[in-house]
Image (tube, rainbow, N blue to C red; front, side):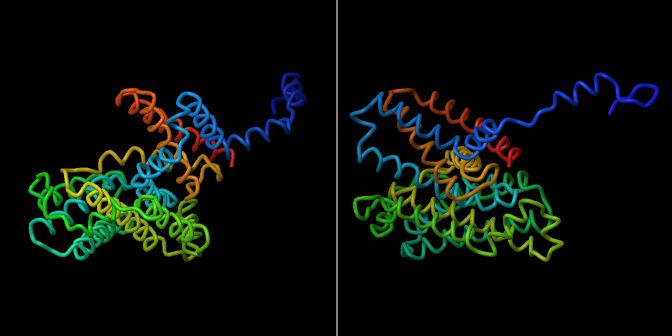
Length: 340
């Protein structure tokens, strides 16, 4: 506190201290609502806008099914990504892992006549291997997760090209394999059911198990978590395995739905996956990545994409909107974390 020369408080300091008032209760309530439910409010407003603009096409059961089906691959990747983001790690190799799983499975069936079940097993094994390598480089050798996974993405793309000779493949795909992504059950795409299964498993992991609590502890303070006896390295490696296997599942679904492979098919998922996860971090739990929030975030993005398409907007405008949403999502997540 500022003082006069005789040691008494200065007039300016006294005035400032007298003007300091606690924040009004209503302001705290509004801030809390915005931080926890701002994304849900935006979701509702956006839904209403599209419903009013295209009532005959947007508000239909078929359209809702299409939104879920289109969002399912993004959701699976974003859910896996949520696990590593909880521990404050990043994975930029997910798009390449999608391409590798897709290409490896299709190439094994088309070129080597491997049964589709074994092709699926190979794709998942490649996901496990990539996750272990990423985890080793980052958790054990202490490499930067941005740089390590970016480099790993380049390696995975190279392996994909080795499997497929960097060519398009649309022959030799088993019919049983095609039903994984192209089939439906109870009138809903199998891809949606796969996404629901992944969501349930990862929600149980993060929200109801001791392992999940440890993962959140690592994200909060890695050094304190280590000193408390938590096996931080093992859990971080496990997180990278989870996100890589999630990406491999998406690669399998994309290849089976399209009954073939095109080079590097998964790169388009990188931005929506991160945008969905960061939107989710501004929903329900301010500043904290969580499975329910990620689900809302990804479906929100899918709704926007579909709505813009129904409005007839060109692709470049959709890309601009998605990029802006990612910026807003990161800012919302950061602001929510500060209020928490």
